[in-house]
Image (tube, rainbow, N blue to C red; front, side):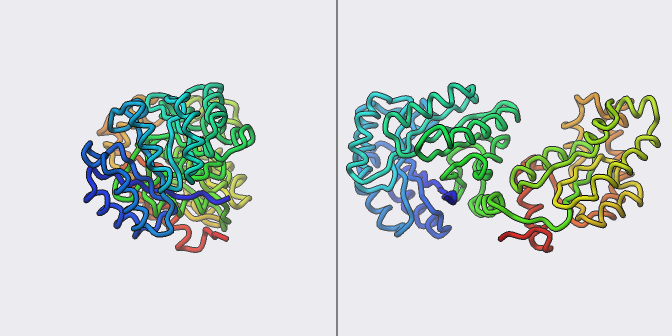
Length: 412
């Protein structure tokens, strides 16, 4: 089942809501979410009229009614009785009604059948804007929402570290087989935005994207979301994707994100050498010298490049040798990631595993090294992508667009 893309409208009054509805409808999302918690109090009293007008104006596009409470990251406080009345008023008009089951369990269990009898499906939801719960808690909450009668169970969490995102996506994948209803899961923020497009792994039936404005941290543009979700469902790569660039430009981060989206195997050349040698890059540099390491690097690239359909993340000095460039270009397209010296310095200043910086971890030294290497990078690159925005999903989108344009990436 394909993932539907939902875009929010979040106006404070009827006029603004209808203006946003017109603009969002032109984007032709699969679903529009009306976030009623953004309405001012006077407009909220006319909720039935507003909903009927929205539904009339959006034609065949499905509609979700959501009042997100303050407790779960929304804009407004509301009494339990008012919350219940709003949800029940929305039910005859909307395709889905979002119900915060975890926060209103007893009320939710009572009103969910009434919402369903009125014709709407219920999205049982739960949001954690400060953390990613442990696996057991996630599973327990989702099962509890299912037991309350929700047609779809939704959970959104906030990661603190990248491992939170990886863990949450794995739990989501397990949940597909643990509960009988459809699920929506997302890890929020820039760190978690990858989860919004890797729906083949997570099993999410809906993903939330930005139209006019975002309703949660980490939402991405609707056009980008659609393309990346399509890529995530299956694609074919001719040759290899080779990522190059100065240290700190995010080659490893981007290659992992690209791998998650495309399903292609990701190989880090430095990690490959470390595994072969049984020691760190710093140790090799210290005991054997740079020339010895560069020979190891060339041999590693020969081994890795025998296969196709891979994402190869190269060390910063890998393309300084003509032989290495020849090896990589024979079966691959070289993507250069660029960033300002200031961006690089901020990313690596606390690192202790960068051999060529260990003697001088300063902005001036980074500028000097980058000025020496940048002409070579530019010379050998087939595609150049700037990463100063520090947005891995946006970077992947730019890379994928270029690969598709040049015939390297084929979508069935």
